[in-house]
Length: 86
Image (cartoon, rainbow, N blue to C red; front, side, top):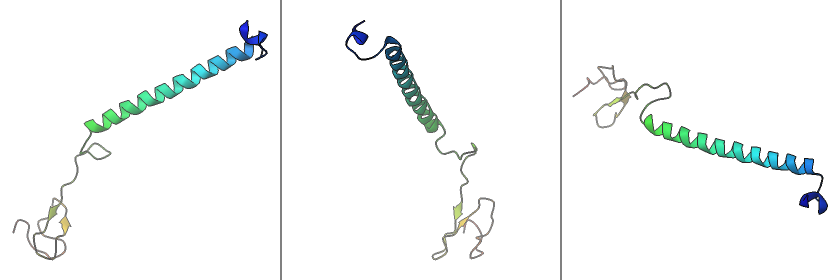
């Protein structure tokens, strides 16, 4: 009764305004909660690629100027031909 007696507007507009405000607050709080859950989930997947597989560990040639990053299955360096582990 106070709202429409002061000239703010009819009660239906006030109710619609309060419902809109409640909906906005609910959506924003749910988005914040979902963002927090997603960030927590990322810490569990640390060190994994997007498909859930562990990262590929390349071996590096120990020759002075080469330092090529080779795939893990390679037995020889792809740049200088030096065998792995020497």
